[in-house]
Image 1 (tube, rainbow, N blue to C red):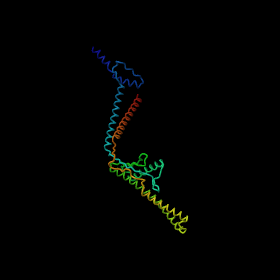
Image 2 (cartoon, rainbow, N blue to C red):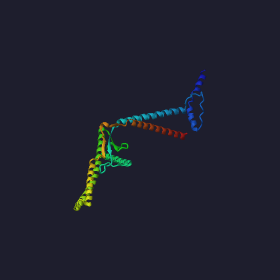
Image 3 (cartoon, rainbow, N blue to C red):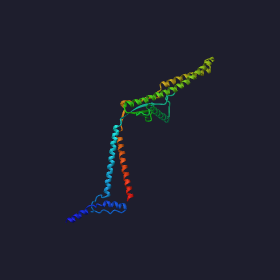
Image 4 (cartoon, rainbow, N blue to C red):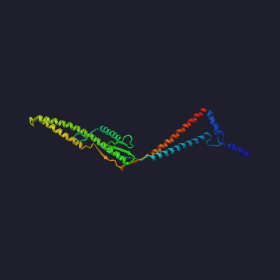
Amino acid sequence: MHESTGSALLRGRPDDDADERAVTDARRGRPRPPVLPGDGDQGPTGPARSRSGGVATKAAVVALAGLLGAGAGLVVAASAPERHTVSTQLLVRPDATLTGDSPTLSTDAADRFLQSEVVAVESLAEELLGEDSDTEVTVRQVGLTDILAIQATADTPEQAVETANEVTTTYIDTRQAGIAARAEATADTVRDQIAQVTGSLDQQNALGPGAPEVQALSNEYARLISLLNRIQLAVDGDEATRVVRSAEVRDAEATSLGPSVVLLFALVGAGAAAAALVAQQRWSRYRTHHHA
């Protein structure tokens, strides 16, 4: 009675050496005998159970590495200073003509002009800030308009506003100075022409005011005087560059590293752990294959 019961219990237990034999047979290319109903445990045995346990362990390691990475990301995000961004909008048009009218440009020419001014403002900002400055300045065209947005990002709203306004004011002053210099050079040329016409009139006055030569010189003199006046009016009334919207502290937008950094660190940690596990698994297979 007891002996038959013991034999039945022994028959119901899985063979303790089954796993080891299965691994040996697999290495030698022998097929593993099928497991028939009633032959002990119906569930995964030997290598199958080992594989399922290994997958769970690897998943746990990857998850733990991801959590550790997320924790590191939280530390970095918490220690990083908050940044503040403000924006100034600036109307930028080509230089006025000598008549004071804005020149008419094609769409492509206008776009090229604005892009050249974007580069000019960025270069000016680099000169003002220097290489060691933590403040960032970006310049972009607002849609298809003739408005440029100058954005400044700094550690404090006040610093961002100060930088945006400084870059804007310096650009406007620089451009207006260039317009005035070109206008003055043109005006000097016109003054020289007026002096030449005046001298010719003095020589032709003996012919009388009705003489054709005198009439022609008088018309040219009047044209040049009018041109000189228009040049001055074009410079005084120039609105080729003006502020549409000024930067203010109340409009500052606060930004931080936040969730994006946490997610990045988590992905890096999980990815590194997964790569290490894959490398370990390949090394184990390599050793097993060469020692079989």
